[in-house]
Amino acid sequence: MLDLTKPFLDRGDKLVCFGDSLTAQEGSYAGVLAKALPENEIVNAGVGGDKTPSALLRLEKDVFSAKPDAVLVMLGANDAAVGRDCWADEPMISPEAYRCNLVWIAHLCRLRGIKKISIATPFGFEGPSYLAHGDRITAFALAAREAADELKLPLVPLDCLFHRLRNGVPLTELAVTRDGTHPTGESQEAIARAMLEAWHLAKD
Image 1: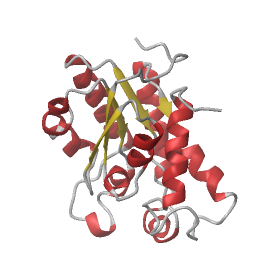
Image 2 (image 1 turned 45 degrees about the vertical axis):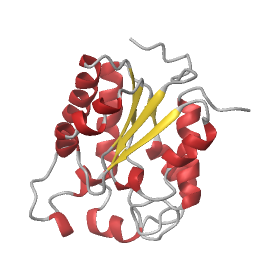
Image 3 (image 1 turned 60 degrees about the vertical axis):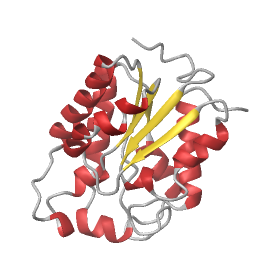
Image 4 (image 1 turned 90 degrees about the vertical axis):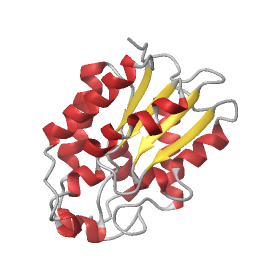
């Protein structure tokens, strides 16, 4: 079990950022982390449109093959949206199924000897994404918290960051994303800072 009071990464650790398009997009938090942690190798394993069921299928190729010391799991926005709008032809994923998938991702990582695993809650919907899906993210953020609690893993509370950055702007308007789902460059930097703080790696 990890000591959650100690830094998540040690000098020289390789970290795989396992996520969807919020991770894969140009200028994402993964690149910000790479600059902030020059003594660590940061691997961007983001795939646009990914959801936890499909993420389970690519663990071997995109995570285990990299032989990381640590894994960050940042998934959930697409899990919350699937079954609606442009993904109306795909099966819906319940918050409980999402929680179970996160637990399995972490469990399989542990079976492969990866002891350092962190979970980030989904960031949030605003503007057109909020109008299309409503406040689905809250239930999925809670599920991510439950998974982290169950496995005693470091949690990055991006749902709290989302609302703090918005500073009261109505959810129907864009404030911290460029399209309702994908964070702006400034928001990606804030996400990276939130990760460093949650992992006790932030510098004063």
